[in-house]
Image 1 (cartoon, rainbow, N blue to C red):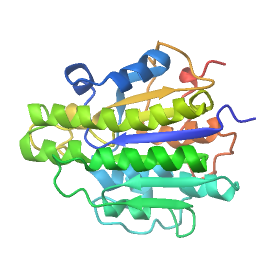
Image 2 (cartoon, rainbow, N blue to C red):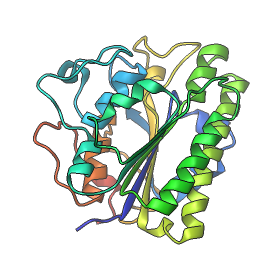
Image 3 (cartoon, rainbow, N blue to C red):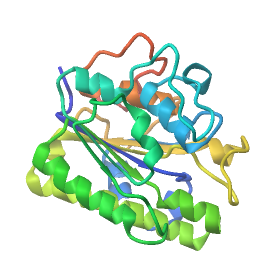
Length: 270
């Protein structure tokens, strides 16, 4: 029995947990207040964008899937991704992103809809555009699973530093993009049936995020929606590879035997 009719996953590239205390993030703050969260979740090593996303969606570490840089290689033997699991169950899937390498998160045909527009100027409004397109499609087409990638934070972090004022401004813009989706769901009456997750692929420090420091490996992990504890701080260990099994559980789907992540049971209300 599914707990949620829809799940929307927001990944903010390079989001440090402490940035949520420093930046203006009212939309994410609401999800924290209404759901379960931790500021001490861990990502994988190497803490690089594509390996982190492959681990998130295939719920195995790089030693298993083989992607150790931002160049994709096919895992051998194959590991089903979350998108494929949802698609094979006959449910709708969608993805919205500004970094083309993310096109390899699922095998061809597993996505019902994909929207890609290159980030371009990282201090522009591409994240807001991604959020606006996602808001319209998610409300009108009601995919069971939607992935919304917001990438300007990482680009600005590399350019200005992962604790700089421009970086915090980019975090605020990502929050505004999330707000576009949440408001559309709220106005359509679908928010109560939708589980929303907000997390990062990795953190960052200075101008980098792949040195093995705690600032690189520690990420926020936030979940809100039907079947989720309210105002609950998760104390158990959470890893990025636990995300896909938790989403599959919310949608009432079985987890493949190849997956190594676990459902974040502490976040569940029952």
